[in-house]
Figure 1 (cartoon, rainbow, N blue to C red):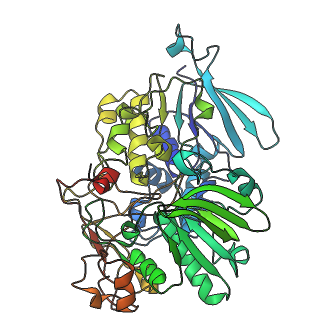
Figure 2 (cartoon, rainbow, N blue to C red; figure 1 turned 90 degrees about the horizontal axis):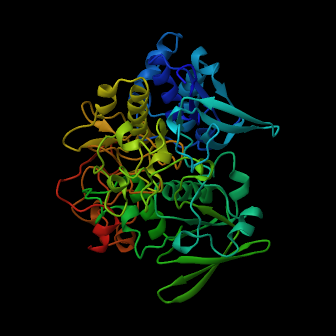
Figure 3 (cartoon, helix red, strand yellow; figure 1 turned 90 degrees about the vertical axis):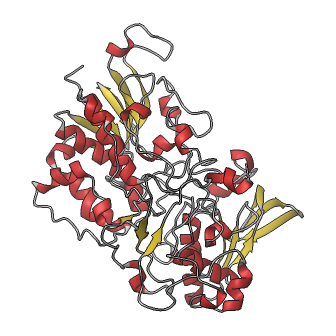
Length: 522
């Protein structure tokens, strides 16, 4: 057993960081990546700019491993796009000899078990190697043996369905097959431009990915006549997307929400609230059938962009003895700490191998997949997870149990948002020294979000916020005061109006309710 490698499933940021920590501990990884290149999921959202600067996007062990290769670390305060994260960090890391020799791309893990034992067999289980069945691009199936397994495969390939109750709506599969429902986070103004120009596009979802896509469509509509934008959310108000009155205890919302609110107020985005999708009718266009508190409703559109989050694919783990939280499908010990019903920004403690363990000894799920259906995962959290797991597998229990994230005790952090005037510099404003900046999510919905005392929302959860709410709607930025005020009375107007961009500060006061239960008053 000791001579066998540790299998790492997924070569995204967390999977490659896991390999770096294993190598540093003297353990040999074998890495399986379903995509044709390392970090294939990141490449899918290459056009998205992170809110976190480079100093929070590079794993410590990976940095040490790269140091010996002549790698030039990017400017610590610069804000990378997904493409820059891949090109300037993840590809060089995957090319390090110790990792490159262990990396199998275009190789999908289809099952994980124990050699000679199915899930029901107990005798000798911990002394039997893991058996990983993989399939390559040509369909060739191969079995690999491993002493331990770290599943960092993420959730990018398994978006949540659009229907109610966690189920696909009637006709959803047909609409996807017809190409009328896209993948999440399409590059609307870039490589996918021709697909959206001049079309009526519906975006479904109330998180950061929805906001990013809506803003990109707003830009496209200014350049391409005939482009029409609709937006549907299940909640009765978009206040939590715009900012203000938020359920996470954040004092205000930021520039992104302010820009989106202006587009809705100006009539450039048609917002449909309290809209629950019940079915799809597919022809040359797409009819989206739903219910509202006022009765049935049908939206006829050319394309639909889903932004409803992700969930883990557990099928390949059917022969592994898992202990999962019944609601969020995270490890049982972690589940109550990340349940979005009660937690959001700043309310999840650092954690490592102990909370990520399962009844199957030496098997761990790390990264975005470890959070199951919860949308609050951070890349830096994943780096600490795999550092702890590698220590545990190396027999250093003290290091495995010493889990911590370098985030401020005050719960205050900053983003790059700067002023709310949609200027180019608002994407490049440096973070304030001594503050902690949001750490991007990975392997899933890549919506970059603010970091807080311990964890922050990500991938469809609450958005970044501005320094403080303005005194009145008259301070609203780059739009008509009356229109913005009418759009959402509870949303504070943006600060730093059309001036030099300033970092936006975020804070979580203690003692406040968090998560969906706070909004419901539970």
